[in-house]
Amino acid sequence: MSGLLGDLSPAQAETLVKFRKALSQEQLLRKKDDDYTLLRFLKARGFDLEKAKAMFRSMLEWRREVGADTIKEVFEFPERKATLLLYPRFHHKTDKLGRPIYIERLGQLRADELLKITTLDRVFMSHVFDWEVLIDSKFRACSEKVGRDVRQTLTILDLKGVAPKHMSKPVRQFIQKIAKVDQDYYPEYLGKMIIINAPVAFKAMWTVVKPWIDKRTKKKIEVCGGNFTGKLLELVEKENLPEFLGGCCSCVGGCEHSDAGPWNVVAESSIDSHVIA
Image 1 (tube, rainbow, N blue to C red):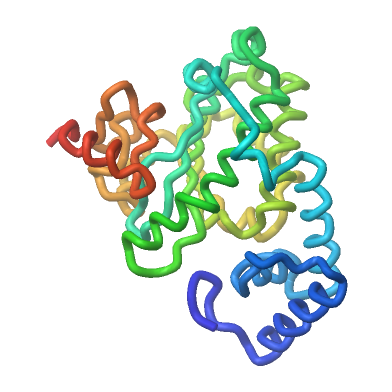
Image 2: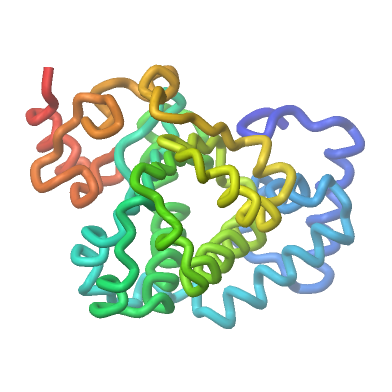
């Protein structure tokens, strides 16, 4: 099989067949579980069949606990726009490989103010909601635009302004919870992560965060200081990159609120006329 996960060896292809059969026999297989979905779990566990089964089973249990299958229909988050001002995190257009770009500006997190208008539990549920929209809608739209399967993202984590206050115990616990969800229940969706504006103190912070991240994910992470524009423009067309990241996109109302991308044709076409030459 070729595609996002590369060609499989004969042994890996055989493991995939065994994995599908085992999940089917245990009545764990869902209709939407195509080979790519199963390969994500196999790859995350080094093609160890038993570990992949345990991971898949754990994912299904977690989805039942949080109601992930129905979250798009039942979860309402009217405070979303307000929370984005206090904790900017959003999808914005695509990179040169057609992957959705996820941008998070951790240095602009104002946790005390955020907790006055919502709870970390609700922010967490909005994170799960965004995952489900990404998988069901945004990946599909990106795939249709480039004419091939797109099921990974480019993440840009902006640490400009990050200080010790941003890593209070509740915030650390929240980030740890998010990291676990992303790795254990949505594995192998990350294509590449660029960490920019890493401060001098980042090494100490990285020591705290690193143990939460598995080896495969660590290999996808590249850390840059303040000179990051060149690296980002290797991955993203200038017109798709917000101004504050060195691009020329200036969305009406702010890129963090536009939801511009192939999944939102109206927003993207409207924004095209506001790209600075």
